[in-house]
Amino acid sequence: MLSLTKNLKVSTTEISKEKQPKTFLESKDIAKKGRDTAKKARKDIEQKTGKSAISAKNEKSLPNKKIRKLQLKS
Image (cartoon, rainbow, N blue to C red; front, side, top):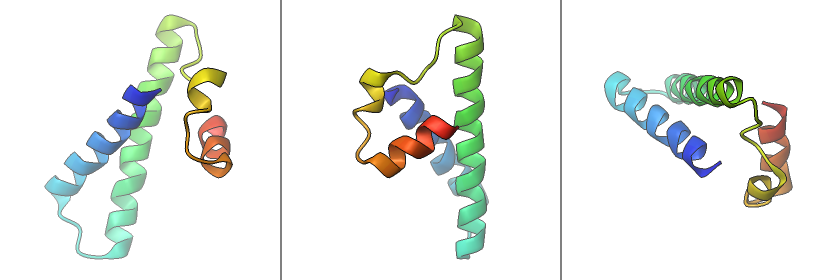
C-alpha cells in the first residue's frame, strides 16, 4: 500500500531529524524504529478493517521479489 510505504519514509525521516544520528549504527536503529512505526500502523489498519493491507495487486508494484518477500513476512 503506497500510503504505508510513505508512512515508513515519513516516520523514519522525522525520527532521524529529531535524533540526528552520527553513526551508521544510530541510523540503523532509527530505520528500525521507523519500520516498527509503519508496521504498527499497518496492523492497526488491518485490525480495524478486517482486511489485509497487502494484496496481490499492490504487492506486484514492489520493485523486486526480495522486497516483496520481506513485505509479506511482516
